[in-house]
Length: 158
Image 1: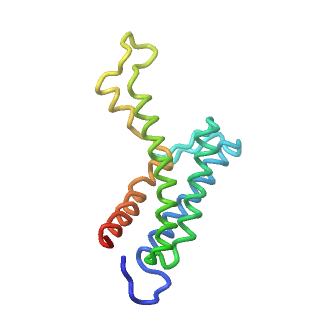
Image 2 (image 1 turned 45 degrees about the vertical axis):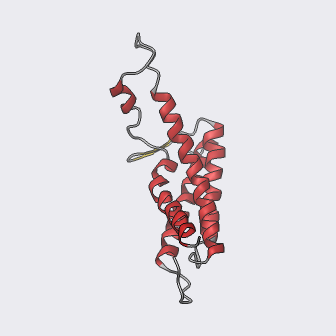
């Protein structure tokens, strides 16, 4: 991540810029669907349902602000202060993605109402992790790259 030149945009900066724009757009979409501008969005493997205030309004606000913070750190992101902003924004999106995954995990444990068993079968449990996914879960692999870079940077400078 060390860059000795005075480039304004590096490969990392462009990556962060794209992820920040997508996080900002997903956060706006979460809030707009919750506010009632759309009954819901389903596009490919992504779904925004929008019926829960704390997940879609607050979660959308956290993803939106994470995108804004990543965008503010995108220029010269190889600088430690700018990359700290990027890492903070990435961790905000990571929190929402982790809570979405935890919710999927908890929803997959009990069997359906029509089943006589309380616990779900292994196939039903694994089927609970099938698409559609929330926008934060779709951003998760790209956010984990930024978290990896932050951990690697920390290990290089110890």
